[in-house]
Amino acid sequence: DAKTTQPTSMDCAEGRAANLPCNHSTISGNEYVYWYRQIHSQGPQYIIHGLKNNETNEMASLIITEDRKSSTLILPHATLRDTAVYYCTSYNNAGNMLTFGGGTRLMVKP
Amino acid sequence: KAGVTQTPRYLIKTRGQQVTLSCSPISGHRSVSWYQQTPGQGLQFLFEYFSETQRNKGNFPGRFSGRQFSNSRSEMNVSTLELGDSALYLCASSLRTGTSNTFGSGTRLTVV
Image (tube, rainbow over all chains, first blue to last red; front, top):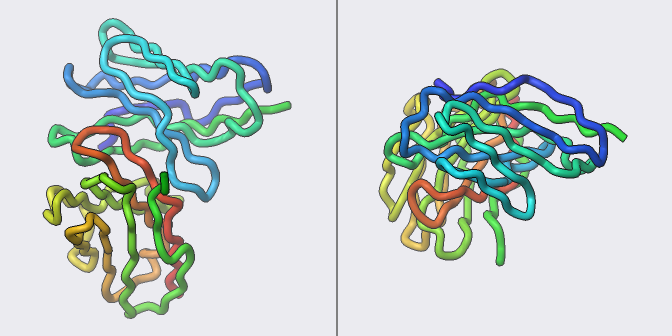
């Protein structure tokens, strides 16, 4: 079973920040949280990952709560091309299997 | 550098047939994983290979199998195809265990 829960869908206005939440209260203390996105009919694309500290790269920022029970992916200036399904996930104990939930379908609107 | 390459992109097979899908990982990546994606079940883990060894297998029947070659290229095989096997099959590679995966574009299999 997926260890993460996300809202089914969200809308965001073009140019505004998109904040995508994820609850992962059951992941263990040494499990990284990974974010991927999938644009229709393509393979998932890695976005960012983190353990305890907030992370930022050229695509997004990841804010992880101090208790590690939830995180938020931030796309600072959403564009129409950011319309996709966003998955918050983590590895199993062996580190060789990702469990995907239903993800959040983000619709960026003009 | 080249990404993960999956062949073929599209495939139509008849019930009862068998199919082999191919995946070429990013150069230097030794871990290859396979996932099945359907509208009803979403993304589900099939299996993972590292250095030619299957290290983990998802909850799929024995009709689903795979292998990895010494150059890290991987194949998966589905025998006695059923209509429910129609799906997008995705391959992902990573440098080592527990690191970010790079996914291919997938093979869309339709069973008629």
